Image (tube, rainbow, N blue to C red; front, top):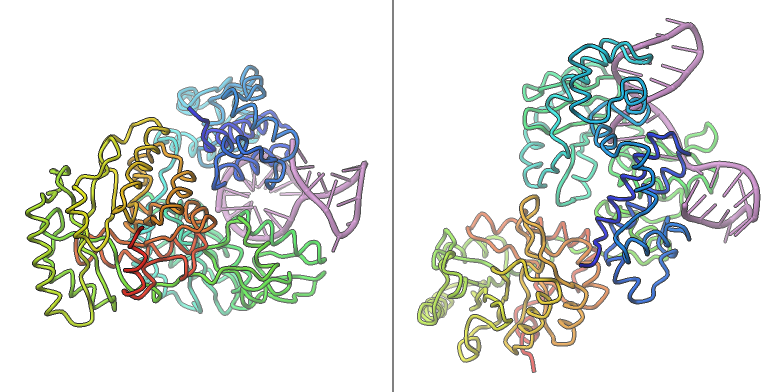
Length: 575
DNA sequence: GCCGTTTTCGGCCCGACTGTTTTCAGTCG
């Protein structure tokens, strides 16, 4: 079983935590964290890169030493240095650092003074009142640690973007009523449209700095459960939903610089600030400074301008090559929702959807689409009301009839055809021939070994009536891991065969991932952004798909459902 | 441990808030 990038990154992160607790050189610690970030976010697996004979030191923040360590982990699964460090410093200490308010220094103090090694040790010490006796800890610290250790449940789950929107919307409306407020924007990963967000970063500008009344208004919000910190320019709270919200208030003149700063990503910001340093500037949330002189910061564009770059869209700000592309004038012109001309994956009552053909058609037409494909499940997927041959042909007749009555939109005859365990398709060719095109997907046997799963999909693509591979990883965010599959191989073969890959826009799927999109684009495989709608309301999830596509650098030309219908039909004819 | 238009050593992004402090360390983002 090949070692995943995430496993390598986790090991580096754990090593960084433990070294930090040991009071190692902070820059060395940071080097491991940077490497973890690079590896975790890299679109191809380290194992594949090494197979191809790639030089890992060409990756950002990976030097000779870390390249060797990565190679060792790929080959043996082990990181000997981590094991060595774990011999002398209890591994569970890195868990304790996840508790709010406990960093390396305090975890170290707790360990050295009270021999606290685990969460249980910590709870016990807090209960018995031993903690406040340590130098640097007082009654308040002890009480906070006691409370937080008690309800600590480990890794905090990130929230789906669509759920974050539901939390943010009423909060935003409430905050807008604050006195003295000029502008308000949600920054952070929410603005970068990441598929999940860890917290909400809200930025407000006010006529004057240090507007205490705005902070009071914020912490008075009736969903606030706990105020973690509260200052003049920055406050943090937890809402009842569990969502952490950070609010920052800056003067209006700093809006652009602050927006840039709080939108991140961290890696992108650090890289931009480094570029500023080279030019003799200091960049922070208040602006761009040359010495004491403030030379930019009113708009984000002015910040980029000072480091010699064009404006970079928030979705690209991950330090995944956007700065280099910007320098070269090669930034993509990102796709927008308006570029979408149709939707190639939708269900009706005939299988497991909630609306009729006509209702779906009308809803799609009202979104301005030229076409909507009806893609009921195929016969093997009985749990989802899969259609047999007769039922499918009956539905096609209905579609033909409805198409005669519809104006401005065309329903396409399709099906979400199951890819069976052996790689064959769930309908015979003579039936598949009747489809305008097919959307093919895996719905069972998720746990095949990677090689078999990949072969299964390749075998399916051999069928000349295979057009689009739906939700290619099968993952459900926070619920189900992706199945083992060699995406690069699949994309390579899809390109050869004239097949396409879906970016499923369901907020829980968003499958392809952003990194998958980057890879598909690089390999020249066309993408269908499709909602997999099971109701008329689901059709509007298209915007999440477009968000993800933008994070994946996709342009209008990379997305097949930006084409008019006549051109799209030609794409589906395989020879 | 990484990195280099200040290039193989000597730097490494930057500011706010809290608590325990008498001027700052630790933590966080």
